[in-house]
Length: 113
Length: 114
Image 1 (cartoon, one colour):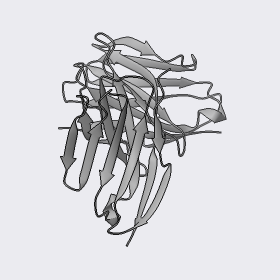
Image 2: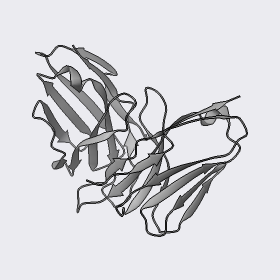
Image 3: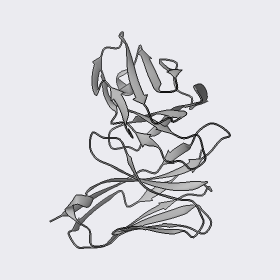
Image 4: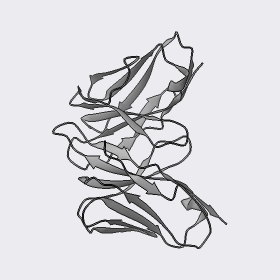
């Protein structure tokens, strides 16, 4: 199994809603990532978890709250988002070793109304 | 902040033509990775180059890593319509026990017309 599975594929939410994005992998990877990709732009790193601990937070606003309950799961909790947060949210995983490739999920296309 | 400049941003060519995509930075990366992304999907790794001066071939695709490990190129020979997509270069740094941080270039949107 070399897949990273993200749910839901599409999400529409209002600015007062609370929602969560989910990501799962069973490749034994101990590094997991959240990236944000705006339309026609490259992915931008948001968070990195290494051995289930948050290792990198790229100055992401607190309305985005990541969680890594175990080595296979990664969540991104969303609260009070703004319309400019609409984007494709990509989860990825890799071995922690240097220069290991990242496996990306298909993403969640988020629209904030 | 480490930046990767990728060029060209857009490329529209006829089937059978050759093309080169460039990825340049003022920073040194531990490796340079090339990804391809289809609409509605996540990026998929094509190749990783690690050693300065390294050349890797993947069928009609040739990847080079500059001697100083700051720049890279992707050359496609005899492009086919199936090569159409978004090509992304990404520089990797590896903070201790913190996974691989990728900084992506701006991407090159390639369209190959039959």
